[in-house]
Image (cartoon, rainbow, N blue to C red; front, top):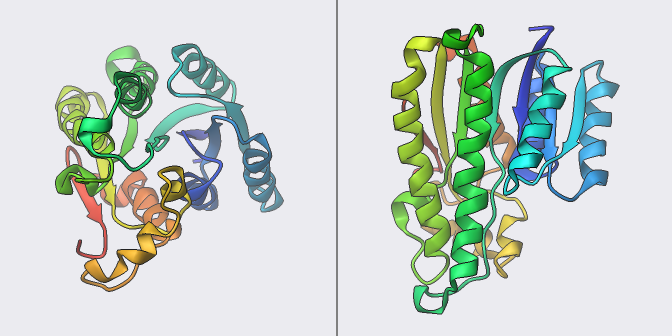
Length: 248
């Protein structure tokens, strides 16, 4: 895998950071997309390089098409694209549906859904055997919110992740015969700072008792699932979205 590149959006913190470190340990060259936190992204790169890995941080707000194009252009100069992890996503402040605005909903869908579509578009152009590529893997990060609905919290976020589940199925059927496996992961309550973005920094710990395993998960546990799906060990896995949620 010396020259194989994986692009990980939202790779500077949380699940994205853990996935970047795990992928680098397995020999991937890692291109880390980050929206605003350059310091955190540079720290991930430094950690990878300190272990003789190869990494590159590129500023990329996946809500902006021009940023996505720049991200993949940078990846082109870093090696042969072999994988994409569509991880970048946002949540809004906790709210009921009757209190949502069109601007909030549109922003949520632009980042969480359109951004994933456009990143996948660029990956397919490079990896599909139809376009002269060598194949590859796309991992879409969804959420158990897609099946639970997140009532009274952020139904718009849950709906955006439901769209990602359908996207995973449809894209997989399009490109499976072109050497690309498309798969998804639905994380459950994970110990990251995403809930702080919704105004409830302790939400995952508060709801831990609703998880059959009686605990929240870690970013590393999601990263382990991601790198397995990227590996040849998962060579016959396509078109499905796997729950990594402690049974929730």
